Amino acid sequence: MRTNHIALLKTICLAGVIFLHAALPFTAPGRFWRFYAERQSAFAEELCFWGGLIIIPSFMLASGYLAALSGNRQSRSVIGQIVNRAKRLLVPWFFLTVFWMVPLYTFFDLPAFNRPEGFTLVRTYRVGLSGLFTDHLWFLLTLFWVSCFWAIIQPLAKRFSVLSGLAFAIAAALLMNDYGRGLTWYAVWETDGPLVWFVLGCVLFRYRERMERSAARRPLTLFAVNAALFVVLARNGVQTPLLHWITCALGALAAFQICLHLARHYKTFRDIRLYSYFEDNAFRFYLFHVPGAYLTFKILFTMGMTSPLPFILLSFALNFCLTAGIVAVVNALEKRLIHA
Image (cartoon, rainbow, N blue to C red; front, side, top):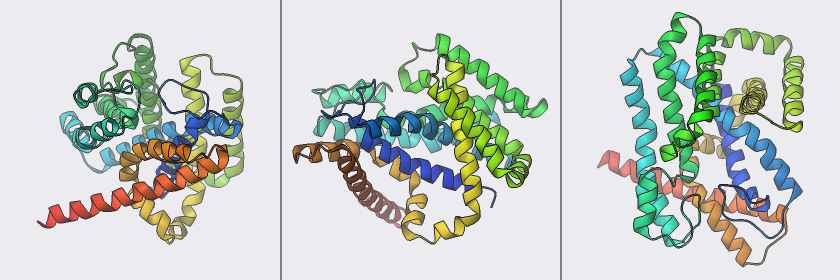
């Protein structure tokens, strides 16, 4: 019962990630995405603006919450924690890069950050295995680094207070932002904000009972204040990295509060077969969905569909079905390997 709201948060955010990737082609060209439609969409811009401030911070917050829960249940050494996270995050990253991302992106010649069109299989493997071409798998790498950070500072946080861990995280994030821009391999340079949001999740776990009592007594007041601060900061422009991290943290806290409220209906959500299937396979949906976002864009664009909203909705639906098929095949193969 303690983690139903976290399961909801992760599942809803994952659906949001897939939807955002369907909308991104209709936004102004950015730094990482390489497919853009001829027409931009104000709806897509707004969706990606707010989603960008909420979804990844929420994932990191949920991951920190679960990491603190795991550490509370079982005691592992620092090395043991790092090895465990490497198995859960680096092993999938390696196999997905070698057997999924590099072959697919080369075969369909899909452009991506640090993997332009025309790259051969060998060159794509080179940038993939060196951690320069990561695409959506950057999240696995970043989550591994911030988990290592938490494993190292956790003894200090236990000795003093978990809030001291948050102070360490902010200091480390500022240092990474100022001096870590050259660490482009394996998504190290992208760990600044995630450090703060991950440790914030650990803080929420430590003070979960107070948080839940406050949310139960004044749910609307607490949410309204949080949401108002988030909107004001977001709309008035984010001028500094620290303000950006705070803005995203407020967005993640607002999503956390909503899911805390929805958790009382968790059984109802689980009774919906599509939802329960999606939640049970959420990690695999994340791992396998991105090439489908590119491919559905190319298919629909070739068919001559240009109207943004129908395009986005159809792209999302097609990619969801395509990814569900891939996940079903992977699940079946895994069962055969286990029983072989």
